[in-house]
Amino acid sequence: MAGRNSPGTLLRADKCIWNRAVRLLVLAAALLLCLPLSTPGIGLRAEEPPRGSEKDRDLLFADLDRQVAALQSQGQLLKTVVRLVTPTVVHIEAMRKDVPPGMLTGQARSVEEAGSGVIIRIDDRSYVLTNRHVIRQAPLDQVKVRLADGRSPRPERVWSDRSTDLAVLALDGSDFVTARLGDSDQVEIGDFVLALGSPFGLSHSVTYGIISAKGRRNLELGGDGVRYQDFLQTDAAINPGNSGGPLMNLRGEVIGINTAIASNSGGNEGIGFAIPVNMALFVARQLVRHGKVSHAYLGVRLDNSFGPEMAHQMGLPAERGALVKGVTPGSPAETAGFLPNDLIVRFNEVPVDDDSHLVNLVSMTPVEKLVSVHFWRRNQLLSVDVRLADRGQFEQSN
Image (cartoon, rainbow, N blue to C red; front, side):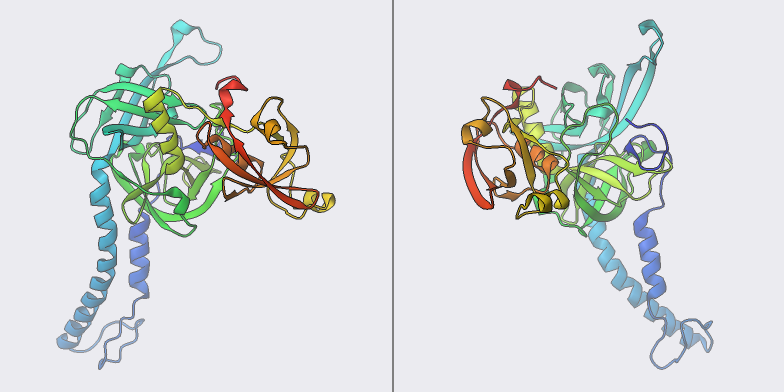
């Protein structure tokens, strides 16, 4: 993980330094300032100090009450979302041993990581979904979970996946409130969202914003090897302790798991990243059911320098997609007949943006699934059905 406060530094959500004022309060105040303060029959301008009789002032207060009531009726929606979601969010503390570079193992120091998580249901049992970096290298008996109602159930088991920075905790006990999960594929830029978590240990804090962008990839998230990235970007404030907490839509559904921020100063600057819940659920289900995550494999080597300029030089009819540079022997791609300079533009009915997008699409598809792949070859659009293999058969496990 990048630890310098240099321009463009990307920090995990539990590594920034200061918090931002509650966005919703500022928004409400701004709206109030924009509301007209005139009342029919009085003739006062908004910038003038109130004058006239006590009756005139009473009329102004009555008009103000009506305008505030209209504003509060909209704010009630957010309050309802928070009441529904809060019981599903947990605070996590993990104590791990850290050995600084150049020190002996016996000189390890204790380091506490703090983060958040959300309770989800998989196969009729409740689990906590969080980030791997919140609990990594911490013994199970040093991981503490606190629920919104004050209970502290003991973690019985933990699974994690380094390639996506996700982890799942099985808790001792029952009667847990589970979150409703949304469909992150349906999220659009501009959608309003709320981030819940425990920034600076202040459990169940709420911040508000919008989806700023989708499909953020190739982020430098330190040395932990977060290989598969397809982040949602949000300007909802994400701060220390938000890692692993849910990003919610206005229907009270989880659409992402808050993970990191981009910062010039080490503080929150309105650029946060969340793992889409569809990706998180794909990983979580495999961890619970099989104890590990199996990623699908196509077997094409891609040219990451491909873009509109190269497409023009090569005379390709499409400026977006993944350009094949080579094919792995014995792979599904070889069986399907892919050749160098094929431009893959659609995978399993999803348009392909670039090489990293194709890698994510393949990796988040079930092993052995038969998928349709569309590609350009010599100015001809072709398609072929490919049965994907297990990446572990071709690459060393992460």
